[in-house]
Image 1 (tube, helix red, strand yellow):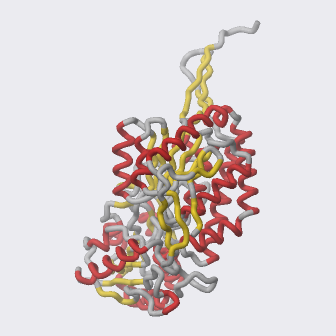
Image 2 (image 1 turned 90 degrees about the horizontal axis):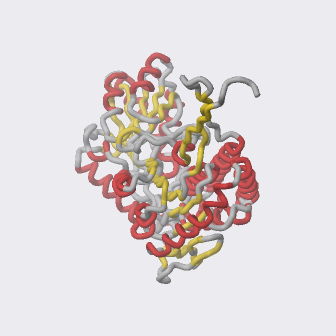
Image 3 (image 1 turned 180 degrees about the vertical axis):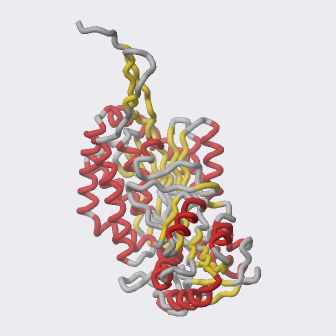
Length: 484
């Protein structure tokens, strides 16, 4: 099997204790690679390298950093086929989904490379005559970036490029289930001219490798995308030393279908929101709230769409497997628990009968009816191709149910009534509210993040990410009146 080491100071680095973690192909269930099982010692070596590289990288002008990142964009485009192939195999995505993810990462890189020619501060007025005041952005230091495996290259780009354009150096903890894509990305950073030590990758488990990033006092920024439970731990540990923390956590996102919705469009976007990427999106639309007047009509159309989706990893497939065996078991257990809690499985709910998929981590697209709004599966993020349906009596009940969980990441509503749409969008407890589209779809220049247990109030990407990765300094000078 292919072995995937760490990347420290511009070169491959073997794990300190010589241990490796097996990575399994989610389509076949067979071993496909071995990633470094790093220790805290490995993480500290990467932090050492990032610290030594910081003076050189941070002293470059933002324009020059942007030019180097633009070279990285060129390399990503030239190697886009390799990146997409790696993602498709490593995470079990159909090829077109992997290509789309790479293209999104490239757009992210282009946007932040351009920020090198902006990175704006502000001029400020003063009550003191002759006092001129303005702000500038300055780097914070070492950024510890911890990424998940659901959309690995997008997540890497989402965090890396704003961190680098602001002048920080990076230690990234790669996802255990997507080690190779992080390694390929690291190799491209060197080829693009990013100095050694500026971008480092640690493979391995969250504990101890990732935890060492969070606990090390030299790491000035922690950006984490993942579960709410881990996010709470990071906030507590890193908060004690006043590190800056950006958390993008879980979601249990509502998708509302009103009685005047374009039914065909609503079914299309509900299906994509619930089942694309095998439901492995923090922005997945996993709760569908439908006006009672059209409930049966929507339900029948939605079941028909879900039942017709094709599983697999070829170009004609709609969704692949979940990422690993542990997640596969968790999803199936949750479905069984929902049935015990009174839920009715309208379609799916099992592993596919196709023998070609029998050994992979596949779950049929699953639609569950009849669950109470407060049932576990109605409230807790699952990260699989499972959605619950709930009838509602009007927009006020829809809004009330939309706001019942601890999460507040994204939401969508389908209606032709502008007043109703804006009432929902303004009042739903979510960081992103979409009208007549899906619950996902953030673009590089758009801020993304959530309320409540979905995050800590930070926003990435967009220019709002610059507030995560830079310090604002206010500079003032008192000039004397008169001409000399």
